[in-house]
Image (tube, rainbow, N blue to C red; front, side, top):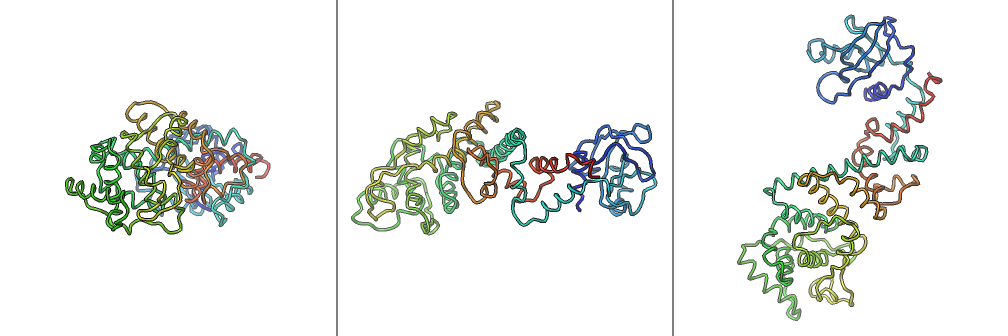
Length: 424
């Protein structure tokens, strides 16, 4: 038993309310359970009760044991002066001056069993098998709320980055784009590249693809070798030598980049070549509102001719133009385009674009990864809106075992206890 369960029971009124009494046999009528308080002070504020027909307005404090009141020194803390009801599981040390409600024996055994299962089960998402028992409309409503929370979390990070970069929006987009364009295994390398090569330098050369590639590959540390017969490589190397001196650039160590156990199409060299072409075609670093337009735009980005026969410098390969694949385009939309669009419209244009972002997610396919696999027994997973919702749920609730704050868990427990009065 944990105190959070008692909070949950009181907040959602999962007890038999028509015969509640204090430990002194005074009848309790609940008019309003109060506002849940996550700050210092009593657990629920501004509750309204009738105790033996006396109307009381004040706060509710909840403990596992009545003795916790004195153990926590509430008797000498002014924040607890207006407590009108002390709710406990075990009334081991009755208080003389605060009415007490003991919940032991007044909570459904079904609820207690389900709670114990959620808290003690080793599976990361112990409730997954119960999802199909929840009315779909309830999940849809929860999903919209969770998608809003996910966009807000991403947006908050973007604004932090924006403030760190002296409120330069284009520079912020550049950092975000580089964070998004690389696979997880090379995320550190792309972050280092963004820090060492300022976008204000790249933008000066935005009309010259050779120079953009030279700046990116040179700063990334890929132009330090000697390939005497590779004409294009040596053009880039010579160009970078001049630009490096001009701007005082410091090259990265090539060893930062990872190539092992990776499909060649995801090599960092290919990603950088595509990034160069993207900057060349869109110096303002696109954040288009329409998903279909953005997909079409990204699908037109093809790396320069050299990369038709290369995945790395100095190593020929069979002819294949290097483009963003379908999964890469979706990843850019989800991790860059939609959060950037949401943040810009909300913070700078003061517009509510949540629904537009949800509709964008719904136009993309469901994402497969090790986190969402825990929910695959749920039959309604079809689009990126579903996978983004599940990722936020897993990251913020499941992985932290915050079941008592989760709307999904509430629906499951509500189903388990809908006939609660018959079981108490």
